[in-house]
Every structure is written in C-alpha cells, then in structure tokens.
Image 1 (tube, rainbow, N blue to C red):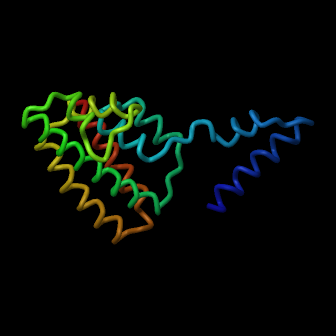
Image 2: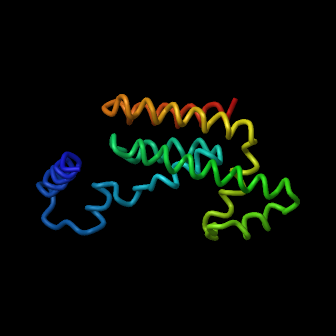
Image 3: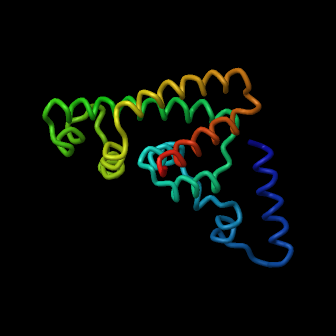
Length: 164
C-alpha cells in the first residue's frame, strides 16, 4: 500500500544522503525485498511445525488487514488437502504414492514440506483447526481493523501449541 511505499522511499532517500551511488543490491537490502515470503510459505511452515521459519516469516513480512482473510482461505485449503492425503494413505497408498497421485498435483518443491505436514498432524487436530479457523474468519470479518493481530495470534498459537 502507499504507506509502505512512502516509508521505503524515505529509507532510500536517507541512505542516498550518505552515498553518491546506489545500486540495485542496496535498494533490495533497504526494502527487504529479498526476504519477502509469500503467504503459502508461511502456512506451509506453520503446518510443518517449523517454528523458527514461521517466526522468521512473520517478522520479515508486513501483512495487511486484507491479507488476513487470504491467509485463512489458503490455510483452510491446505488443511483440506491434508485430510484428503491422509485418507488416501489410510486406504492403502503409501505416502509418496499419495502425494504423487494427488489432484491438483503437488509440485516437486512442496513435496518434502507436505510430507512433514502429514507426519506432524493428525485428523483430530486438523478438524479442530478447521473449526477454529472458521471462528477466526468470523472474528476478522467483524473486526477488520484488528484482523492482522487476530491472524498473527492464531498462527503463533499453532506454532507454540505444536511444541508442547
């Protein structure tokens, strides 16, 4: 949004007062573009119970209020995918075969983290998380100004509860 853009321009202006030449690498470092993670990566690491990476992504990114509902929707779709994969495994497919045959296809980059997610979750926890996410979505819609705090608290609870 514009506020973030103005802040980034102020950083560049302040930096340029001390230097005559600014290169692309300087701008990338200043604006943190090199560490800008997407929502899917945040959710994948949360589900894989990778707390260090999840904390890092939350600290590096500035998610806006409008991102909260996107996070909820992507989180729900990934949980539903995990339920389907676990059902396939229960029906006799091994883990690799279930991931390879899943539709829509799981890309090769995601396969290892999906394996971790399957190993670190159970159906009961997934179902409770889905119910909780539905409540979180309702809260976000009722209190859009607080949506960033609501979704961040939810994600932190997911990571913290995974380590107890």
